[in-house]
Amino acid sequence: MNKTMGILVTGGAGFIGSHICERLLESGNRIICIDNFNDFYDPAIKESNIRGFACSSSFLLYRQDILNRSMLDEIFSENNISLVIHLAARAGVRPSIENASLYEEVNVRGTLNLLECCAKFGVKKFIFASSSSVYGGNKKIPFSETDNVDNPVSPYAATKKAGELLGYTYSNLYGISVFCYRFFTVYGPRQRPEMAIHKFTRAILTGSPLEIYGDGNSARDYTYIDDIVTAVTSNLENIKGYEIFNLGNSKPVKLLELVKIIEAAAGRNAVLRHTGIQKGDVKITFADILKAGKMLKYNPKTDIEKGIGKFINWYKSFHETNRQQK
Figure (tube, rainbow, N blue to C red):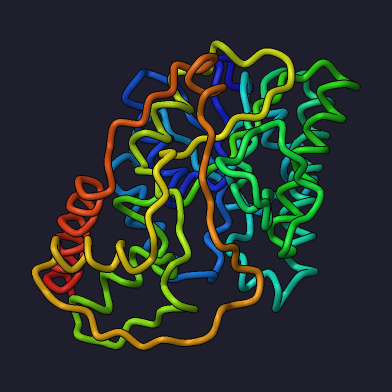
């Protein structure tokens, strides 16, 4: 057994996970990362995400699946884990409608497996990556942690609500302190390729048609990756009891306004193609961040214009590097 205390990060080669691993390594932590490098998007992107720190002596990577309970038992028994940051999940509202059983299996059973391991091996701190999607079509805005979230409009949202409930159960039964972070549309360098900002940027820079669902007046609370990472990594000592927090920017941006911001940063015009509203979509997401501000000192600093500029700079650099390597 490795006697050095470590932090287990599931989904650590993904978008948010790789940034969190990187920040924690910079702070001198030992990281145990689990990621199965599945084919939801090109696994080479995940390889690129962790390339900068994969060789660190403080980074241990397991290419494993959170559904493999016996392997999880081995990982927990071989490492002195002080905290679990559980980010691994099947992501995306629309794909969950097409394959609900897979989302249930990975997002619910996978979370249960990790909580069972925490109970078995005495790990007393657990962070669960939840989602703004749990608010469904709530009419009251901004969304508050005390709002009713019993009406999810997609299987993905339902699995995230289930994860929160399991966290509460295991906190109550085994004294595990659980913080559930409801992330609001996180974006920035390494963002998954199917997400709106990445997809819109790609379409605008290549001159491809950009699909707008509905009338373009739906709005999202876009939150820059650095603000999320700072909130998660600077509050590890504060994890006590069971709490739910919104982590958003608290400034919703309409879809057509977002397109204009990307156009301005990219220096090109979009070719718009309007299409119907997608199943599972909601009109708006809008985070009330008063609780996170008070208890976590959460204070997002990156506005959408600045964040989009940083993302486009990364996008161009990433694709230029890939072209040179081919």
